[in-house]
Length: 158
Length: 137
Image (cartoon, rainbow over all chains, first blue to last red; front, side):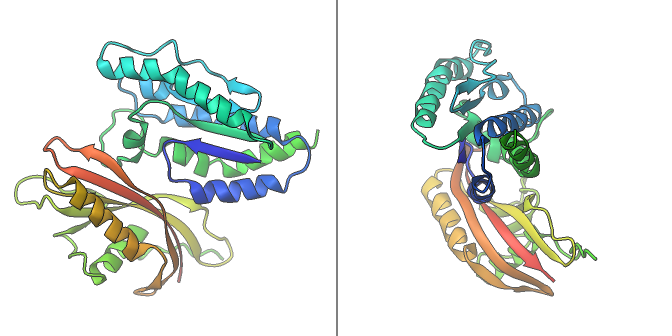
């Protein structure tokens, strides 16, 4: 049972603790895990710095049942080379995530951003953003650990 | 009763630890919360930021789980030296146990890095790494 974060990095310990707690829960864990992480994805997107909107749109979540809530991918701004690259790489990266997740035996969710510059924006605490902030995904997970666990527990009991 | 530590932030204390380890002085090489820029400011600087705690603090006693980010900037063209400096700082902090003033640091763990942020508008390379801390009074 696991949650994996694909770029940006920096949450190993938090995910380790979260996975340990999830591992103690019996029953159908996958549904609650997916729903809990969908909330995290939404919160992360809400606090992602927006310039073209491509970074925000490059968020993805892949669970054992496939890509979830994949509203992005066809909606990237491709007016510059950077946008063209993000659009060109998005579906390939999500497909790679799907095959990684498919190989997992236990309940599993992978969440991340496919934009090639995601890590730099995520880690640059000095950048001035008119909207959003650095550490958007990390903070969304840190601030919602209990919600994820509660959601997993609630759906596991059904 | 809870007792949130208010005397110094983790970033301030980490700067003290780095200074004691020979990585420079506060306000010259080492900065807290905001990377300096402009005339008269060194290119080679280290800045430490407080980030969101990795766990909430304990309620019944004073024990906190803060996180920090350390950022290294070097002169243009010194990307490798910048990375090496980040690695050196990581070595100084990872596994640190000690006291800074009245605050006990039970563990500092480097959890990711060094991560390249590329070059700034003046061509200076920048690397960051992240740490989780445990501290109490």
